[in-house]
Image (cartoon, rainbow, N blue to C red; front, side, top):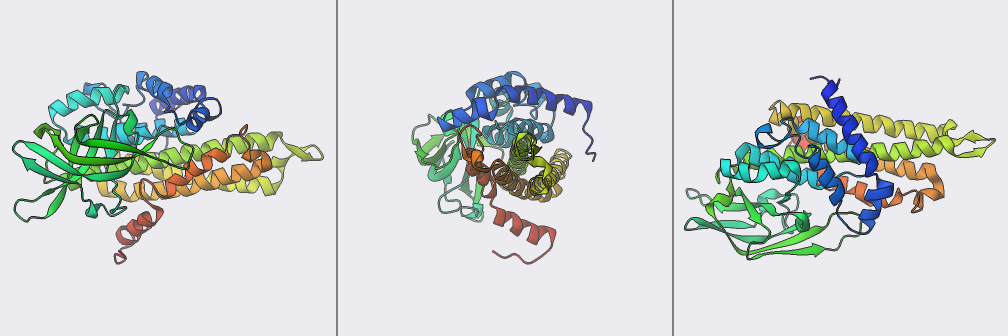
Length: 387
């Protein structure tokens, strides 16, 4: 495992950074987010350039690379303040699961369109009464002849208004034991009985969150992804990429905050014509958050390399650690950037304060800080399970 990126990866970073500069936070992503409008133009251009499907198989129009490259794309976009949330769910989670477990028909139907961005598929796992405990999911799927009937409710499902379908996590009954086990279904958003309701959020974001109601949603047999009795492995195949992508987005956001702070600290003078960045009260906190963001980025890269090499358990540990570290580092970096700017950091012109709530999401999603600590305590340290 090398942390020295190949020329191809360096070229990919440069190309994504060039695109991201065009769609930066101050001029594009920020104003769009304040109007609660999705970043459609950026998504379309990223798709045309092959960035959205860089992790998907070449035979289906993707780049044939891995989660490392997709995380690289996310990091560079976020480093200009224009990270694309739906990259986490559409190519990373759904694209990965369909690639690994989908039928030929599902792959042919979905992967080329996920790769070029012409279609989006989002992910539906969270439920109001389950929270972090996915074992308490109550959305059910039962057989009715050749069809499946789904009933249940989901919350905090991102981007349903932009999506053609939702990959729903439901539970089926084991015929031998009677126990419920998870299963994955592709549910087109126009299916009868599928209802979405927008949730009112108190943050500045371009993408909406939804509550989903599934009332006797009838699906054909081919809506099932993979095997109904092997869905735990299938489910977790998408959750490691989710954490890696979340870490990449947070690390990029941290980089954005530090860059804005450094720009200001080099230019702003208060005492005797010396830039404020010359004072240790300004420079040391910025140096500290720079170190913390870089450390989080390294763990994210380690997680991506482990995942792409097929080391699922090693990737799970590193992905959780990366997600935790990057979330904490990005929040701290953004807070320090605001402090560096003083009162001007709270103005619309500087456009930092509006990002703080968005950065805070990293502590609670896609998995909470506390559940990451539970995972590390139990699996990395071998301590007794606490919940």
